[in-house]
Length: 227
Image (cartoon, rainbow, N blue to C red; front, side, top):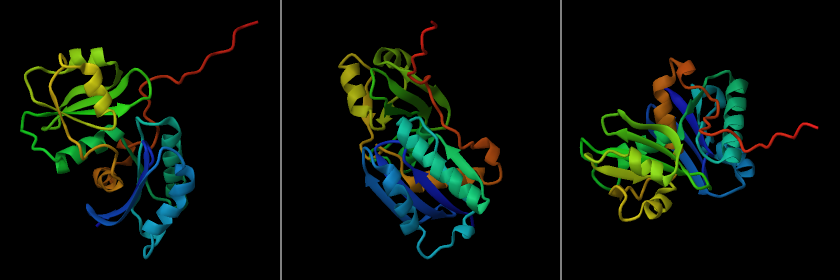
């Protein structure tokens, strides 16, 4: 019965959960736009009350895409803890966690031919996008796309369901001529319990779940001009 600690700071929250064989033992989550670096360690300690860190079989963490600073905070904490207890650190994409949440607990029914569109806020004029069928097939691979790109990429012959924190902005930018997407309103940010459950599949193959950041665009860095 694998015992996994899940850590998410990839978006506008700090979420930690202890999961045993897919069942949540303890869970804590606070929405916050900043301050994850101060909140995370005490939250981990609270979730681990009554359990020894040495009892963990793995530490799981969202690897992105998401907010640059938040991702680094979660990844650094998870890798440090895993190294200390000599257990695997498993990185799961934010897209996959949100898609699994939608498949498991969407507040509207998703038909067998449905497509789940995950839209994550970039705070720019584009969106982080992934679209996956209910059958697990990729419809749109993880990308950074504008609303116009998304409009052109979405299938027109399958029902679309959108989740993620950028869902309202994408709906607005697509406008009435955009593809019809029904909102999954209860799937907005990653749940650390779902993250840990997803990670369970990689216990025996940690190399397939690298705890390295997933970036979909190069950093905004201006190289100095040559003199």
